[in-house]
Amino acid sequence: MKIGTDGVLLGSFASTYTAKNVLDIGTGCGLVALMVAQKTRTEVHAIDIDQAALEQASENFSNSPWPELFKFFKSSLQKFSPPDNKVYDLIVCNPPFFEDSMKSGNKSRSLARHNDTLKPEELFFYARNLLSEMGVIITIYPFTNKEQNEIKALNVDLYPVRNLIIKPTIDRGPSRLISVYSKNPVKKIKTEVLSIENKKRHEFTPEYKALTKDFHPFL
Image (cartoon, rainbow, N blue to C red):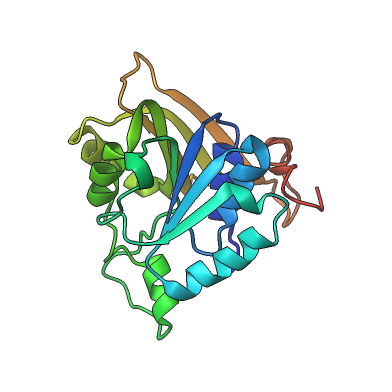
């Protein structure tokens, strides 16, 4: 899987949080894990069910300036047992979200894109058990999944505390939603809106540049 805008947005956003330890669910090539480690300089555990993805992530971790920060595990979230019964202050996931749609002939690509192996309700249930009491889970999904995902999270006592609504351009509707969930409810959910581009292609908005500038060499 090539680096995509969803991963860049999630990694940039998640890296603004402080944490003593981090879990990246479905790490793929390791992009989000690397971005979080770059800013937090904390230990990151990365899991994936695809061997080829883990081999790519391992190579990328080894070539980073901080290879000692990473540990990776071939495991599904449903079967993952962290070392020493660790719990995490920050859990990030750029999840597969295509459902009942045509799959490509590439097995790894299909695993990364379709939610057969990790449905939202499973993500919330199993991730909550790995979360520290004051920790947060950060995900990115299509904006149209907002209400049903909030219901699924609330069913396992995870509460939305912050939403970042993503618009591809300033004159188009929302396409993605970065959501932050916690074990602790808040009186008012913090909601922000970010447009990636102005009306012209590759003419990035100031807010997108501000969020991603530490990761994009061309900004």
